[in-house]
Length: 441
Ligand code: URA
Image 1 (cartoon, rainbow, N blue to C red):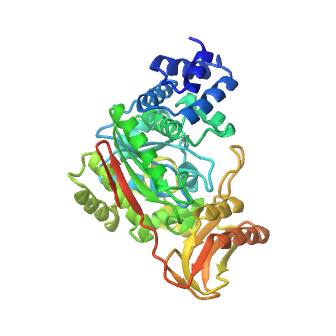
Image 2: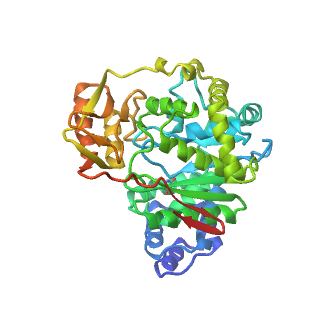
């Protein structure tokens, strides 16, 4: 087999066989096929597309390029959850302990991420002493003992995706549905869970800006999961404005604690109940979504979800006293309100700009090597549909200096749009995609 022939075949619009896909994935990981040939192939795929079989074959080849987690020693049905990413998305921090409290074992591999804020692990490392470093044996025993463990994604998990994603990033070939779906799903499948719940974001702050491509990505990913024997459900959810009120690592941890106490913002609570219910049904802890929701609400209101979070933080070396008293978390130098320059109804808050303002404050990484400031970020005081008078607070910015505060405040202000009539806030849940159905709301 020659790489040249594979590029030519895809360039001319033909489908690649499983053997051809295996050949280029293996050859690339081993360093036998150069970047320039894989770049040409990615561009050919971008224009000519891959069918469902090719997409599933690519996913399988990528999974097989590295280690696959063996979670068979975990008692019960493990259900993983993945979000395609958005501004203020801290659902994993809440869902983990929430569904674990309801009896679904959570064995999650998570990342640090290059985003507007850190990833789940960065956020959890806000707790002094918390660590994701542990042997596979300890990971499994933690899940069996506490119902939940979160580990760092090891380098040997899907090495093909690491190389391919880095190449796609610099060759303008990231935004192809099959390539995105196979990239995400290969990591989920290698993570070893029995079932997967996907939160596919749609809107200005999401990877997929429009509803059609969000449903398209949801369908691709559900079909891949199903073809590998994993029950997979995708929920398409709004990312036209930030989720909840907090954007920034410690701020998001505090909001997660409030939500686990059942005192969180309504949209964040609702999303956690929706995704968590799907997880309980896939994990066979509830017969249907309604029963699952009732169980989750009880775990929040009774304090059991919060106790599970405390137990989890302690089990991974973190100081649990911060769960009981979040005011112990450090604050940055400047904590100051941004006030509205005008009266009116908030008609939109561009999530992307809010994220960029948080990044500017230091909440996220610009490059893999850069550090992040866990203390900084934004809490939003007014969301879409709210009325403000001139001078009312729009948000509080947590900044490392006056200069950064000013720069981020200007950017944040440009994210807000006002109108003279009351705007309706965008629907949070846009639809649900399963192996054999698609519901749009
Ligand atoms: N996230 C991923 O993990 N892979 C992609 O290709 C795009 C987003």
